[in-house]
View 1 (tube, rainbow, N blue to C red):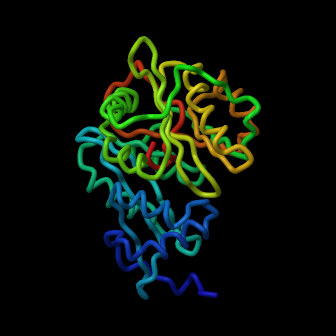
View 2 (tube, helix red, strand yellow):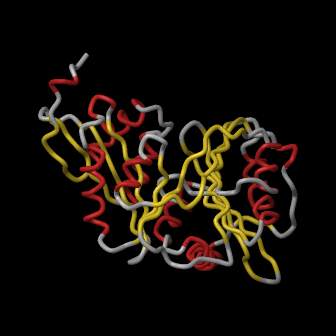
View 3 (spheres, rainbow, N blue to C red):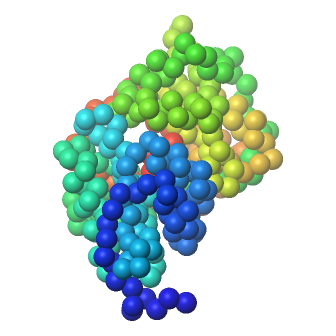
Length: 284
């Protein structure tokens, strides 16, 4: 086993495709469920750095994703347990701050990282609850307003997502469209919400899910629950209670964790559509 006393951090450099195996190893080391393909997707959509020791081994990572000129998210911040309490996390974060410029920043903090982020000017804004488990479709609802997305729907989906999230995530949506399945909800002759489900971690994840109210959110989550009945499904939501939470629990998804979403700066205004399920804790 490597003696941590002999490890010295020497380099912070850009994260590249050649680092996927190493950063995937980091996420495995700290118990995250991400597959190598999950890393490839987030790298396709954003930018990152790795921290290397004097032998060139990757010991830390951090990434950021610009969603327009006013907003970005930060995620995939990992420091090997062998390098913790040495300032590595702060160093990689400050590299990201410099790259993101004047954008407002959002991230989801683990309990271990919250104090660091607070010291860098982030404030807690809301809780995110992680629900997961083997899906049971018995509670899934059939709603005539919901249908599979079509080619002509995507500009409307992107506009609705920007309204709910506050940033331009059209590039992210295009990538999710390629790897996932999308449903929309029509009301009054217009698209009022959408949901995407894609492979992630141990199975599939539902998100983003954007809707005007929780009833619409349940209707939009239902086809994904039916599609993945009997297999592992995950949903991360800012909802503390109400119809979507009750639905997730009735579908066999248990609340396994709660984390804090934090913000630095003033993000753009959002609404009336809302994000009911995150794309991921990194991408928001």
